[in-house]
Length: 389
Image (cartoon, rainbow, N blue to C red; front, side, top):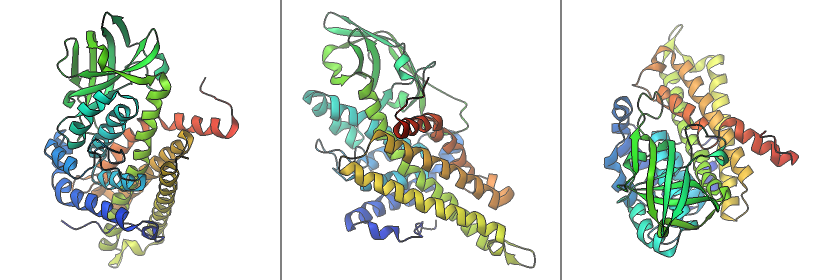
């Protein structure tokens, strides 16, 4: 299998230091050697390649930008480059790593007790344990403040009732970070697999994110001990802080999908000959599409890089991350569509990654805040007026 050469039109690599380049190369080699040989079959059979979990743990991919408890303590550019390479392979694998690190390890790290951190973070970092994040409900996705899942205090336990859906890693998870309404406002809880009253069922029939486990979580009189409440996770703001972490990773990840589509189309156009045996890459309409893709990928790289540097400096706002997620997902999806067009009928074949990326990116455009929600977040940032209602 050919090695991915990278996509660097504007000397983007000159912005990266030696450590950042090494981290990217490690992730790139993992994707080329371990994921690419199995991802087509995994997508077609709708199975997640669980055999890769432990190896990703050893490489430090889980919670890579967190400090302590066995985590790699990488900067946010390094973390973003890992997400980029993983999503170059498949959005499903990047989603697994994003959820494990940004939506499970981060809230435990940021809002958990020392006992919770000591117990769960080393296990999650190594891949010995898998986690999931329960916020979205069947009737409430973009408006989590209206959630119906409740947690009521009974003695020294909290009793949860309700349902969460579209939960990545749900049935794989050893622990779920679950958000519920209480008399004290919205709170976060750690619900362990096997807890009476807690069950997970997988969602089938997906035409997108097929190499990813997506589940519904069910709580019926599910009692969790007081020590399983995240003590510092108070209010919706805590849950939204977790989403910002995940959105940041998405903004980097989709660059990888766009790169894979672009490089596949560029190579195909140079090899495919039509009209007097001339490569189709020599035609103006083809070059226009390639020029658009490389320009937008380059802009996406620079946007991601700058937001990462702001994040490392403690200056990245949620609205900055919304721009990153919204813009980069949109251009990645358009790169997939243009690449499919350049491959003609071959573009729909699973021999090529184009349709797999395109289908996955339709989901990525929706989750962790839809395109419309991020538009309104940016709109509020520049006008000062919230327009959600």
